[in-house]
Length: 433
Ligand SMILES: [Cu+2]
Image (cartoon, rainbow, N blue to C red; front, side, top):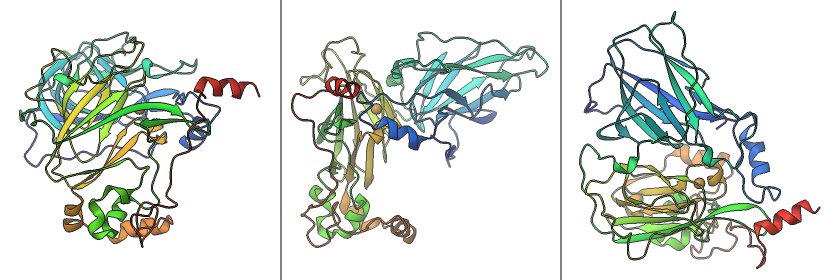
């Protein structure tokens, strides 16, 4: 978020399935006037007991403001849009032009035309843009923050930004538009171009509840079930490669890393219940998953609405589910995603809001560990990096190389608050000093 970022485009060796004249990359993001390190200090702090995320000052378009996109008339552009920000989702809109969505997160989809895009951090959208034949006018390219994601709206916050689709440099630039509540494309209904059918019923269901809460130090953390991800003393991959036959025993990866072992080729479904009133874009490494179901917005509900044990009444699972690797869940709602464990590796599943990752909203999927040991390896550079950082590369999560089942000394989360203590209580305590 401090700026060490960019775009990486991987060309399809089989060529792009849709015709276009020229491709252009557009990054969108937000900008903080302060660096992440000091922001994190005040964020992960008992004086911020509600876990209010730091709010950026501005939004960026190709890392600038009021950017220009010089276009030629009568052409089809492939615009690769990447939200490289760390926190706030954005709405995009072009004056008098349309987005023709052709891929999400690297998965080609059947064409969908929309006026508005909603893009969370880490999501990518490929769209075709057809330019006009007339070159007399320039048009606005608007972006706007999803203000629902911000706890407050500080005075210095820029919420709308205008960039320009330029047909004629000497013509006037358009004015600013304000994006209100817009009807954006719902990615749930996107059909992959390869029309891959819905995977069969899962062999392995992982149900996780998203909770934001305070621990005994008064700091606000994020949890899947009761675990806030806490980094192990030994990286999971190093534990795997140093553990021989124990590699498929989840214990060795630590009690606070929220690890699961996935068996080769099993069908895995993650049921995620969001007990929080915010939206969260969840990201899985190693797979583009099928989006089986996503519940509606229950922000106004007195209680969160978890995925019903008997299934959602009247809901029919899509025959050709959308596939992507970053999916938002709505407030106090749920989603279900499915994939086949056919890509051996240790994969993080986490909220892609960087602040929530700092708060521990992550878990680890150890997929087919014996195949990782057999067919993969870590190179010297990997070990050298760990050495330079003083990170141990052998042993279980606690760094124990003799007994892989003895986790004495492992990193664990802060102890819970005494019973009866609430975040509100902490606020009272803090402000009574
Ligand atoms: Cu989150």
